Image 1 (spheres, one colour):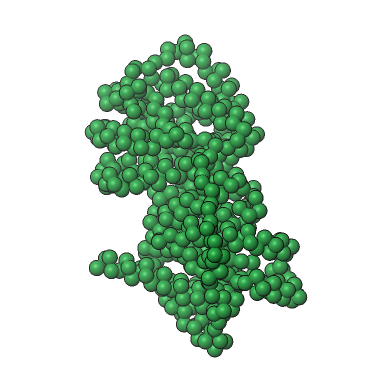
Image 2: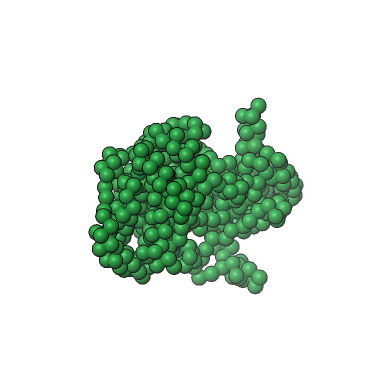
Length: 500
C-alpha cells in the first residue's frame, strides 16, 4: 500500500502559496456547512512514521479552520482509569458530536500496532483487534460519521533525513528524542505490521489515505484537499449511507414462542420469600466484596420488561444487598440533545463501570430494537443493524472482565391491566402510570414480536437473556437475585480454576 508514497511528491513554495488561500476559504465554508447541518461528525485519524509531519499537519488544520469546532485528542499509554475499563472505552468518550470535527493523534490503531511490533500481541490477537476495529468503524459510518484515516509515510532513508533535519533546527529539536532513534531501528517491523493492519482495515466505509510525508508543502495540500473533498461529498448526500440488512423472519406458525411458553403461574409464599430474599441478598453482598471480583471484574445488570412488570422493585432488592459506594443505577429515558448528537451506543458506553464496580441499567440499549422499532423512532435499517452492534458491545464488555446479566421481566396482559388500575387508584403510586403506558398497551402484540426477535438475536452464549415470570413479584425478585449470584459464582470460580 506504500508504493505510491515513494514517488518523491513535491510542491514548490510558489505553487503552495497560490493554493493555500483558496483551500483555507473552502475548508472554512465546508466546516461551517457541517456545523449548520449537524448531521455528521468528522473523525480524522493522523497516523504514520515519526518525523512524517503528523504534529505539523494538526497544527496547520487548526490554523486553516475554525478551532472552536475542532477537537484534538492525543492518545498515548492508557491511564489507570482507562485500564480499568474495556479497550475502546476511552475512544468512545472522545468521539466528536454531529457537526464537529475530531482529530485523533494516535488512535485505536496505535496500541495494537506497537504491541505487535514489540511481540506483546500475536498475529491472531492482532487480527481479533482488527475485526473489532472494522466493526466499530462500520457502526460509526452507519450512524452518519465521516472517517478519514491518514497514514503519513516516509521511507527509511527519508525518515532518517527528517529526524536529522528536525534535530538540527533549534525550533524543532525538541521533537526528536532518543526514543525516536530507537524506533527507527524497528522500521522494517513497523512496515510489516502496519502494512498488514492497513490492508485489513482498508474498508469501503473507512479507507486509508497514504500520503508521502517528506515534503511539507505536498503533505499539507494533499491532506487539506482530501478533507475538503470528503466533507463536500458527505454533505451533498441526501440520505445516510448504511450497510444493507436482511429483514427479520419469524415462523411461530403454531403460536408458541419464548414468551407464550413462560410459566407465569410460579409463586412464592410470604414466608419463603422473606427467607430466600435474605439468603440471596446476603450471598450477593459476599460475592461483590470478594477480592477476585474487586481486582478482575465489573458487573452490568440490564433490566428490561413489560410496563409494570416490577423492574423497579427488583432493582431495589438488588441494590439493597450492596454498598452504595459500589454501584450506580442508570435510568434510561428518551435521549438528550447531547446524546442524540452521538452514535446510539455512546450514552451507554459512558456508564460502563470500572473494575470492582456495578452498574444497573433500568432499561437499556435494547430500546433501539423495542420502543424505537415499534414506535418508528428510527429507520428499519437502524434497528436491524442494532442486533449485531449490541452483541459486539456486550462481548467487548465480557472480554474486558465485565459480567453482563440481562433480565426480561414478563407478566400477562391481564396482570398488567390490574397493576395499571391499582396504580391509577393509589395516590402515592400515580406517578408510575402515564398516558404513554396506556398507549404502549395498545401495541402489546407489536412489542411481543419485537421482544421475541430481540431474545432470539441477542441471547448469546456469553451474555444470555434470563426470562423472569413476574406475575408474582416475590418469585420474580428472588429469581433475579438467585440468577445474579449464580452468574457471579460461575465467573469468579471459573477464573480461580483457570489460575490453578
